[in-house]
Image 1 (tube, rainbow, N blue to C red):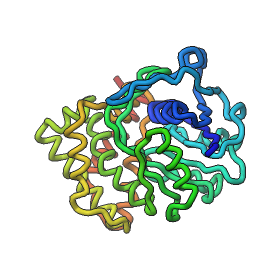
Image 2: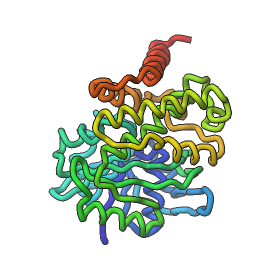
Image 3: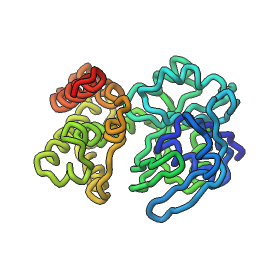
Length: 310
C-alpha cells in the first residue's frame, strides 16, 4: 500500500511494532534517542512465543527532520514526553498524515488534536506485554492485539488501511468505532497492575494475582474503573474485568511498563493513567477511593525520588 511510516519512540512498543512492520516490508523510519551505532550495526531482534526474527537493517535517525514527511506517524513515547512532540511532529506532517498515538491513559488524543488538528488524530491501544532488553532486542511475553480507532469519530477508510498494513505484518488487530470506550477498557488493567506493581514493592503481575489481598484489591480497582467509565458515558459490562484477569493469570510474571520506568528512574505516567481518569470519573459522579489512593501514593513516591529522598 506504500505507506511511509515514522515512529516516534524506540522503547518496547515502538521498537516491537516498528520491527514487525519493517520485517514485512513496510517503509519504516524509527526515531532513536542517543547513539545509533548499535542499531545500525545489528538491526533489531524480536523474540517471543511463535516468533523469533531479526530485522538486519532498519532506517533509524536522531531527528525527525532527517526522517521527513510520512503518511503515518506512530507515537510511542511516554505521555510524560508529550511536550517534546510539539517540535518532533511538524517535520513529519503533510496534509493527509495520520497521527496514531499508542500511548497509555487518557488525554493524549486531545493533546495532539489541539496542536496539530483533530483531523489528523487516531488512537491505538496495545493489549500486549513486551519489554525492550536493549536498543536492539525486544521480547514479547503475551501476544495481544492492537485496537485502532479515530479520535471523536467512527472508523474511517484510512483506519482500515492502517489495519490492513498491520495484518500484512502479522500484527493482530481490531477496529473500533468507539475509541474512548476502549481507552477506558484498557484502564481496567493499567490502573491496578501498573500502580500496585510499584506500591507493593516492585513486584510483577504473577506476584500480584497470587497474593490473596492484592488480588482482591486489583478486582476492587477494576470495578471502580468500570463504574467510572459508565458514569462518563462509556458502557462497559460489569464483568469486563474477567478477560483482563484471565489473560493475566495465564501469562508468566510480567513487569508492567510503569514498574520498568520506576526501576530505570524514568518519570511515571501518573497523570495519564491515574490522574485524568480519576478527575473525569469524579466529575461524572463516580466514587474512586482506591484509585485516588494509588494516585496519591504514586505522586508521593515519585516526588520523594525526584527530591532525592532515600
